[in-house]
Amino acid sequence: MTVRVILVSPAMSAALREARFGSDGPLDAAGARSARAAAGALPPADRRLSGPSARCRDTAEALGLRVEDEPAPGDWDMGVWRGRTLEEVSVSEPEAVSAWLTDPSAAPHGGESLLALCARIGGWLASLPGDSGRVLAVTEPAVARAAIVHALALPAEAFWRLDIAPLTLTELSGRAGRWNLRCGRPLTASPEGLTPSPSGD
Image 1 (spheres, rainbow, N blue to C red):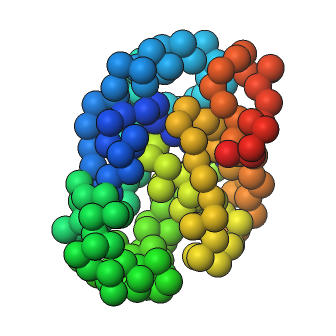
Image 2 (cartoon, rainbow, N blue to C red):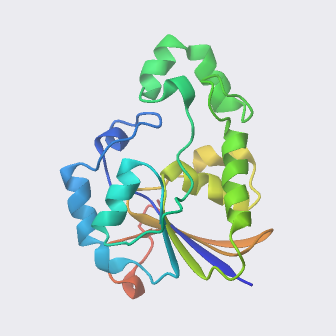
């Protein structure tokens, strides 16, 4: 049976704005306003999930979602780099950053490698029962990017070429081993009127 997975990226937060590794925190005021304004734009779903982070939970609440107790997959585990910016780590650990950016199996921060992240998210997709119907989940951008890489059987390096903007939809439909992708739809209008952003983000 076909499963439709709709991943909603969280609204803006201070940690997202500063591009901090795996740093959690609540939505900022602008992010909360944007999420509340987009509440009516969500497509219908049979299951509603939220990632465990504060920004995912805050986004789900602002969107008016009543989510299940079972969480959606959490963010990329960035180990000791959590809370730091890429610029900060590049200054203190340039060789480690170079390895992380070029080797999908590298995890110099002590957390998950890119390959491990994609495998974890792929495992979650494969675990969804065939009768799940439409599964809507508020998830971190890294989770959506890893889902695309896994679902389309892309090389792990393609992860770095994918951008997921705040409050956009990434839709995967199909079943294990055969997925179709629709991405980049902003939550700014009624579902019927949503169109891809000009940049394709």
